[in-house]
Length: 197
Length: 369
Image: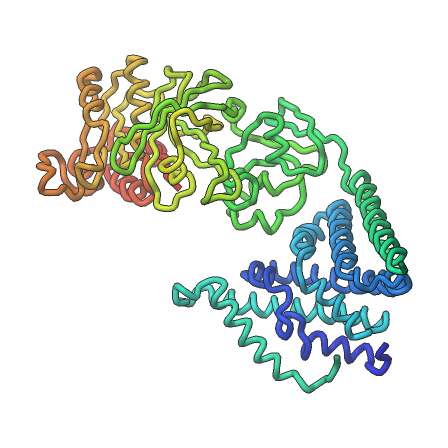
């Protein structure tokens, strides 16, 4: 395991230089669909932060305590997906039960996240990059924050753009993808600041 | 041979992981997500018991109470509004686009999004208790014009329907090329209430419309169609004053229903029916209306063409329906108006009518949304 990299370096790298959305283009579907308003994208963003952090930790435990000892590393995709799906469902039930407020701001976004590829992506990256438990925790959290940052920024831009006249053929997903591309270019400005992988 | 134990370990491990997760989910579903039986109190007198934790719209539907809804509970039509008289917590972000500030103060919620987790009290219009689901069979499809079809549905189960002339039903479109799930679309009945074992609809082709395309390209005599209804408060008021009917296109349907209903009930109040169309090929049921004129002495039918073609040889009224109204209606005193048609036509006509002095509370309309 790469002990050399400090957890805070991984944390900031996940937010800026290796932003999972803008450099890996993961989690695009909900990014395009739920970035119309800042308020809802904040809700979805915080749900992603929470789920990514917790599932990274859970999947790390499952990988190193179940799959590696049994020599079943090749089953990681299916195990990770099942764990993510079950965990998200469970959390949704709990949130719905305990707090209406939390459910309205966060809970309704959880089903959207179950199938978000960025969540699975984060778990797979942490395995590929041989992160320690602590590193994985901060990598998951950083990736979540990075994703949330990108979607909130996009929602801000789209809200501003609501009244501008977009050519018909580009309206909707088209212009959003172009903006995402330009945002990715802007995030390239951070590259070189921290070097990981 | 070393591969076999390896394979068995793999199968065993994945089974164990999924089983454990499944057991956790089952336990959670039975404990955390179990809200037991909850009661929904309707209009302070009727109480129904439903399984907790499910959306209000579908819970009520199981109790055979149908709230009007066009999208089937996905939160994309905003029709299934219900007034809550008990506290159920904050609005969900999925409801907000459909709720105005005024509705917020009255605690009006979208019933497909609101989950029933505890005992609640709601208020719905009494007439919704009459709403039922009907299985019908297509008895007849006739072309009224090149783009309007008259569809007759014979009721199979239940066998008869009770409604007021002018009300509408919802037509359930099954899955086909244009829709991956069944959807509902609203159509006014053009038959009158006395024909209580059939429902006649007038459906105009909307390019790429999910329901209209289905009706125009797939519906055949003998097909089964599910409808539910009746809905709406567009019906003839019980007064003696002059009535103006204004319609365009398939807006003919509820007006026709009202007129035949008047004929059967012997209501002989003064009424004028302005029907707007582009050219003669958009006109239909003119003969029937002329016959009604003979049977109802105080009824006048005024068809108007906005763009008559030379070959139409049109001698009647010309111009937009608003111009015709402006010419015919001298004063709005002692007058009620009933409008059915496109939103643009209704808004423009209402403006003319109010200018003539008809108060807004005496103008009733059914907008095609």
